[in-house]
Length: 272
Image: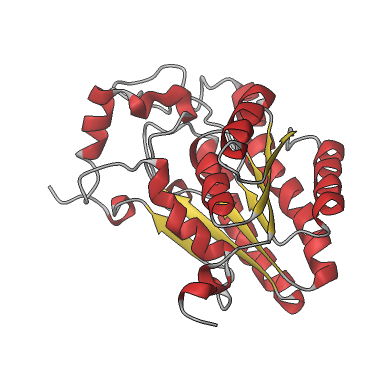
């Protein structure tokens, strides 16, 4: 196999949760653009159908499916349908997640009275943990079921640099959810190695996506965040594609349990 052939996902089947926007859509695009057959699963069915249609117009094989990752029965059905359609599952991206709102500071750097630990609506905690942590468990549980039977596969989980650092503007429930995901990846990697199923995490920093209402797309806020990043800028979703393809493909065949941080150096701290 040549060097570049290691990065091929041609003919493989992949399922991406939260695939209708942001980083999930970037994952769908890079996999489909490189020959994979992709199920784009998202709770936002309108966006899923629109984005899948846009990619199919380019001759790519992308199939939209409605999926609420908190719903275990529905998650199982979506995976089962994927395996029936494609004869197996080679790649799974457990990406679906939500932002719980601002932390104890708002994006403008002012104290946020609704984000304090003693004022936080417990429903925000419950929903964030249910989607970001339990939903990830539901996803990797089904991926493991089908990959173990074939003794091969790559599971990629979207964690965050929030698993390793503190950040005042990030809502409290997000932090332990992502920390839990990161440790779950290590545990699953150890468990599934016997079956040649690899489990790795991508830990992004600031990316201009729709999460949190898309506030990082606001130019003034984005400039203030750019200044916090050692490389001097937050990222656009296209900049995560190469890493996603690496983890999905045989190029990373000897890697499992890794937490790959892609945050422009933010987690290293700031140089004043």
